[in-house]
Length: 166
Image (cartoon, rainbow, N blue to C red):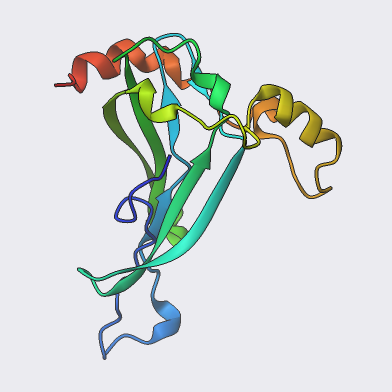
C-alpha cells in the first residue's frame, strides 16, 4: 500500500533575503506509513519503505512511503468490504516546540480478486514470515510484535460516518 507523495512530504519555507538563515525555524513534518483498518482489525505492515520521488507538478523531491503486508492478512476480508487507509502525521516548528497532529484517512472498497497470486512463486504469508524472522537481519525490528502501531480500528465507526464511501 503506497501513500501518496503529496501526503508524505516534508515542507521547508524559503528564507527572505533580510532574514539570516540561522534564525529560520522551517515548518516541517510528514506522514508516517500507511496502515489499513477494517471494522475488527488494524493491519500491521511487516516493512515500511521510504523513497524520494520527483513530483513534476511541484518540481520538487518528495517522500513516498510504502507499507508491505502479508497476503493472508486479508483472508478474513469480505468481498467489497470497506477498509480505511490511514496515515498519521506530525507538522510544526521544531525549534519553537510547536507541532500539530494530522490524520489522512481515505475509504477503500477492496476487490479481493486483485490479490490473486500465481502459487508457483514464493508467497509472503504468515508461515513464510515466521520462517523469515528466524534468519532476519539483526537490524530488522518486527513492527507486528513490538506494538509500534496502535489499534486504529477502534476508530472505524467514526471514519465510516465521517468518510462515507461511495
